[in-house]
Image (cartoon, rainbow, N blue to C red; front, side, top):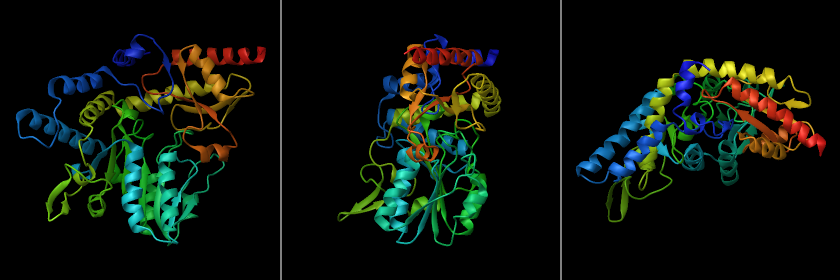
Length: 402
């Protein structure tokens, strides 16, 4: 562990006090003390609504809220008017499906997705297809269970209207060639919706370079607060979409009962927003930027290589993503149900994920009921991996004795 990583770990209570080995970062990253301080500051020293009052406290809160929007815009390389605050990536993806999908698709139109998707990326379009008569198509996965440009080309046609794909699989850790896919999709005049929940923690995102039409992520995946997400959308698309919720804060005027809605992004933010969370998101972005994506990438590669090398030392282990792009492994211990194994890991204060990981189509594709998943982030260490390997041996011994 180098000095920078040691200093970073001191910002996280659970890591500083060695409470757990936290290997479930694909589900949610831990939160540093700086984020907690920002949220606490809002509730203790401010606590008012944003974009409502004209008094000083309200103005300060509104300024902080909109500063966070500017921070996200810079983070993604887009305009602030293209940043919608939501409850999370799931909410963001549902907004696109409900507002754009239901109002622009018709029977026979095609929606392209994949079996690598998180349920949040695929299920909204399953529902849209049911209601509009559109056809859901899947990109064939290659022999490594990856999405390739060639396989995407094989399913893209003049009937393709929507392409909804993950930027990075939450089970396999595979990076999708989104930039190339968006270019092909646009040549067919299709709209692209990218689930960036797993890629944002590991990669510097430039939505202009990717040229995607929509991009979604959650704050809690990048050490930010729970319950806050971002929907990026090209302004003209957002502005022509109808709001999925109506109420306070998004109304321009109401004359004789007929409302006029504000322009994007505000027309998608009805009611009192998640103010503390939005402000906390800015602090999380500042924190990630301070850590630096170069450091995150370097540390992630070292951890990934070490994790796989150590895990492959063990017998009776089945790994499903040998060539993953991030420090994430999906595996099973032969003859032991993943939930049983996870319970034993927990007895040793090691947090791992077990189940279908909200990606049941992928489990079916792999022919598995469930898998274990270990996902690391920049604050994890090789020493923690060593403990995980030792406990994995203990898991095998425990069940072999019984």
